Length: 154
Image (tube, rainbow, N blue to C red; front, side, top):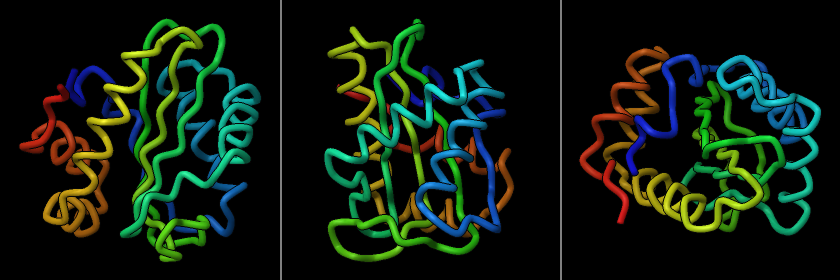
């Protein structure tokens, strides 16, 4: 599995005016709808339900919200760069500006875990995060993510 399996160029956005985690979840759902035709209401509900189990802010300004949902055929992801970081209740209490959200079919056990591992490993790499933060162009962000040296999952 690699980022080309999860991500489309249309599934990347740079956002300036996000004021809360809840607003961000709506923006993620809208992006998932436009890129993968995922139902917006279902996506928001699934993301918020997962978030209620514990925040998905993993530290160093990175959040990995994810959800399983019915009606999906494959694991899909969206990436958002926030121009102004927001509180995400992250483990290190740092605000978040890099958000990679995953949506998986309800029965996608191993594929969902492989995708989470790939994204987590890639966004733990400080040089990759630095490049992402320095390039507020969606096409460039797509290239950085799909050409990252850590794109291969186990």
